[in-house]
Length: 162
Length: 424
Image (tube, rainbow over all chains, first blue to last red; front, side, top):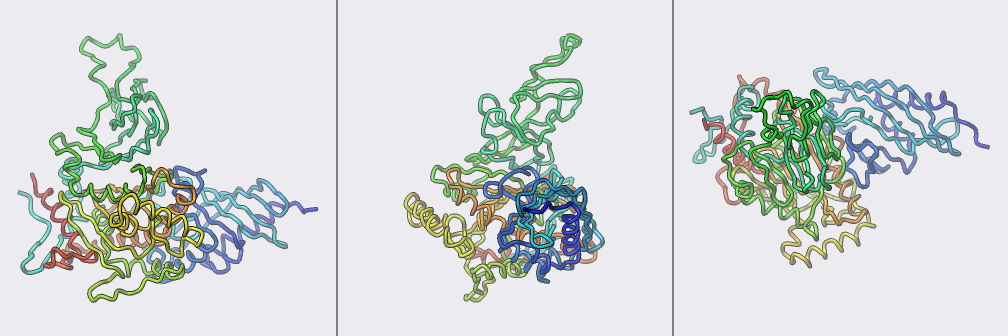
């Protein structure tokens, strides 16, 4: 008998994840991922597309995520040196389905990003997670991020982990 | 005659660019009139409009247009402006429609632009002629092998003459497809860069910046089994030799021996062992169809092509069509697409897209650092009045054997730009 996952448990996990990302604790964030994890940002004009046939903004497998983090923590990653300061609010958390250990979750986010000269960017959209139950917590099997704008526009790059 | 913005003295080996060109609103206004309204400007690719009625709305040369395939199957570019009061007649980003409907007073146009219906038209006088009130079109629209351009200049030469030798480099891209048909893939990358548009022209072909700007990309390649060795030959900054080539009319390209892998068709460990066999087959097909020399060229050379003023085709880690347009002197909107052969298999297509993201785009491992570099330039140029000139003489005096990491091609752009800006 699989125990039903509660929204509070999922929220605790997502809020913890958000804190790790805001604090640039990316090596710890990586421990939240399954070995076959994907990190996906679809293009603004094909949100339901498949990264194998559509040009995404980001379509990382586990190895590419590892490389992305090596890159973004390197002082030679000019787009993130000095590091952006980010603050994200995650809310409207919903459990969409549960199948055994697999849980599908939707949440909304606002991520404020401050860079040099306090230039601010606001990423607004929703997260779609595939989570796997692990003990008292979860692992991320897939994190798909919709940026709710018709185009990236003023946001420029997505050089942070969103 | 307006003044020149460059100091160009080949005898002394001096080439300087007046930094005002990136800062001045007045120069930007002149560019609209003397460059964007005078040249052929890229609109889109025929493959984006598959069926009659397919349309896409875009801004081209600052003009809102509808790029559409009409009921007869012909590609048209219509100004997205109602003839009545001027409202946009199409607000969808893309779709399929037989008619465009102005929501203001209900005028209806066919997808060939003809005015079909005017509510209450009995109230108009005999001077009112629907036949003269079709949606306006740019002066000319032409295509070269499905690359569609428009111009606002009725006196310009035909597109193929304008493209000149650049067509040879478009042909090399199209040769990837056994049926000579390339298609734009779904998914558009659109982003704003806080820098003057001409900095993107420079950046798109400037191979001098690669080792410093893209240090983390080189590191990623090394981590993925592609060790990019430092150049052995003196004077090179890249591991393989490459050239910068003038193509006329302000167009130019780099032409490099590949060292970074290509989905068509140079395998690197990044693609995985599973890809080896299929990539060998792709390359064999190229050699068989095009002969050993040209086949090898398609498979194993990278080319970053600039069609003056604002179209870039990077045939490198993948193929990207990139265009950009100013939104003020210190800001530009960039749009980029991926291009691939229509008959590509699912696995080859997935590999092409994955290879694209290793380098290009707002989430790629290289482009964000390009964006940063251009924004650093724009911010640094706030001192332009006290530090007026940009240095651009690299490789001067060895015309004829210009390296891709020299600045010969940048000078070609600036000389052509300056010539057009000095016209009345």
